[in-house]
Length: 164
Image 1 (cartoon, helix red, strand yellow):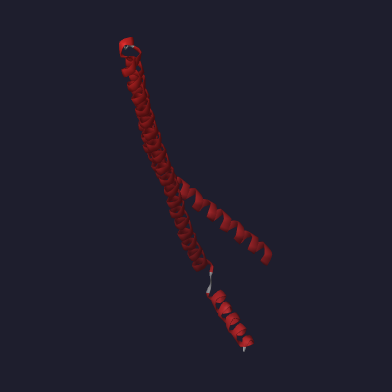
Image 2 (tube, one colour):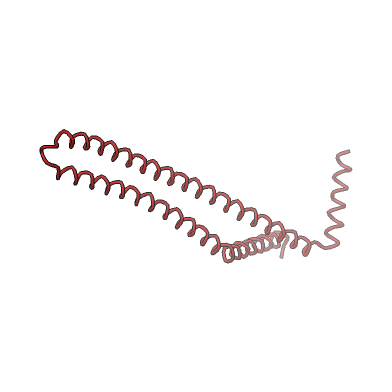
């Protein structure tokens, strides 16, 4: 083969090695990462469900107040009006607090999820880079002959001489 053919074969070999490396990473790091993200998703889902349950309890409490108000006699209409106003304020306060609480939980969960994803992706990229460098060093050490080394040293010395 010509020098160009060897270069193409070398590139093909490098791409195949890289593909194998990526497949190994997916094989061994994919499931733990998926499990971690699934557990994190379940935790967030549980928190959101808890917040929704609290909103439902607030709405149930509202319904209870409205039911009691509907059963009062005409004799206590003034009292009913006062109670209705207080119940409305309490309902709005509870709903607002529950809604704000649920929003804070959702926002915290979203931020935590994004940060965890960034951290996981960063760790994966670092591991890929480290393994790629290690493999490249091994390949260079395996492929570099004594003649190649001497030729490269000679070329380097010639370049230094030409700079002076």
